[in-house]
Image (cartoon, rainbow, N blue to C red; front, side, top):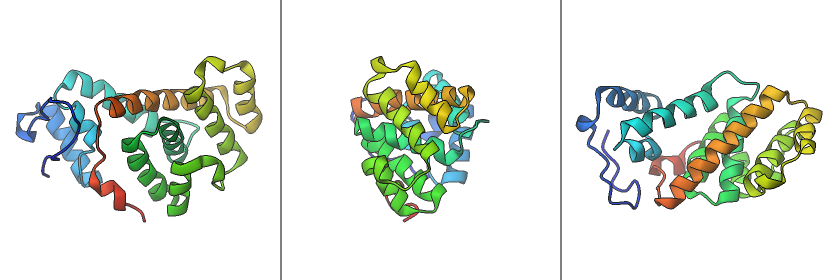
Length: 192
């Protein structure tokens, strides 16, 4: 696969595939095989394997690891958080994932614009309300916010996973915005 022309706005060169360490080359080959591309967020981190590895490990654990949250619900959190933060990269990439996982292009678009307008379960709505508040006004989080999740059917372990996923995307959104990271063009047409 070819290296993207524009990954981010910083004058930090994205290394050519052949210049990457063996572990990163293997990881990117898996991305090519499974996704048909290397997501630009990974390409952006590829200049420094010491930063790429923990970033991709955390992503893998949060988004693919064992959890009471479905993969779709984790992607919904990514989109709701990214919507608050107006993160073009993550709205595009994770909006595509919501469309694909749900089989519903309208849900993906509603999630990007306003998750409150989407037809989702009360349990999912409580999850997204929590992620929204954690993103918008983290200093106002209270026990009643956690209790609202419990009342909706989430366990304390689920609350940890909701919080960790929302927190990860807040960090990722800030990095993407700070360096003007661009989503891969493929995301725009996926699952439509």
